[in-house]
Length: 230
Image (cartoon, rainbow, N blue to C red; front, side, top):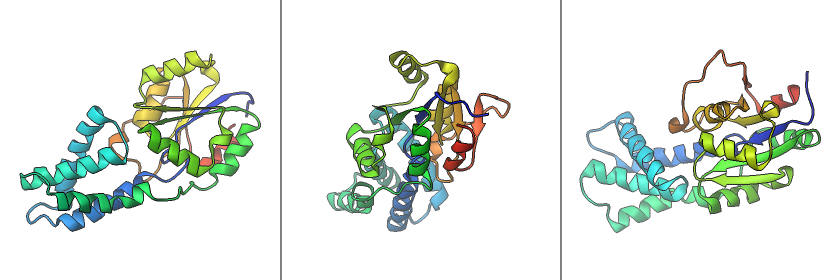
């Protein structure tokens, strides 16, 4: 049975709009241009994943950090600094990340409008503040959320702080997202419920195992299915 008056906290990238698939397309273009003479693409991807993991921990998220990772990947593979021409080429590959319209996932705007009539909606997204705000503005979804929080990382302490700031009743609060690592696990550790809506292009660094027996996690396949439960 649906219960009105709950707090629904939404992730943004790959929950409300397409995001990582655009990075994946740039990576494919990067591999094509790189044309490494000995290593296959899966081998290079392992190297790139390690570089991205280190840079995310040290510098955060967003297109600028991503471009840094691509350049460092080239330097690691060829054991030399990237030339200015190479850096310009990498920047050109990633133009689609900074000069694009937002592609909402199916049914997002209509579902948020319906949910907002019965529940309190918040947005919690991580990344570069300017970049995330630009995407939110382009999406025209800000009007659905009572509060928007852009944070460097989504750890359990962030969810606990959010609960204190908004005086949330944890049993009536749900975190909704596609990332087991950033959306589901830390929200559950903070005592909230969670809704897992997987996306086929979720960034590999956001993957994590979820407890299949956790009754506090609702698993859906499509965003509009939220209306069946809230």
